[in-house]
Length: 111
Image (tube, rainbow, N blue to C red; front, top):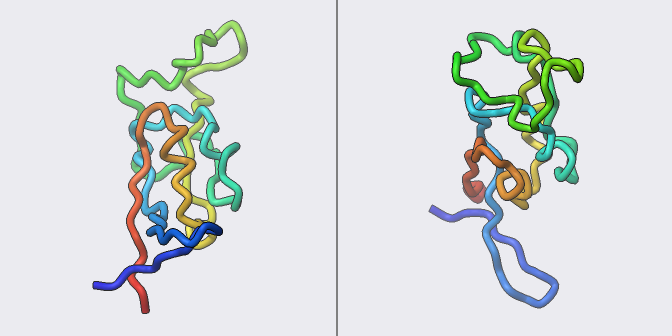
């Protein structure tokens, strides 16, 4: 199996790994991956819009120390989704910044 590889400016080869999936059960909707992504791959959506996704009783999406008094509630919890997965460049910035390790990446097979 041959995979797509890249070359750095210094001539070193590397294998980019592209985002394949987001574990939305673990996602806390913090938006860090959205902010760090250079290619508009992600979209922050309301948790209730995601098919088949229910909040577990122990979900800690509010790990950011904001309480309901700040306008956040269980009813408006957000979760990240893949908006444009084909625009991913394989930099893995999203995985490095994610506090909940929600991302699955894989190399792309060469054609």
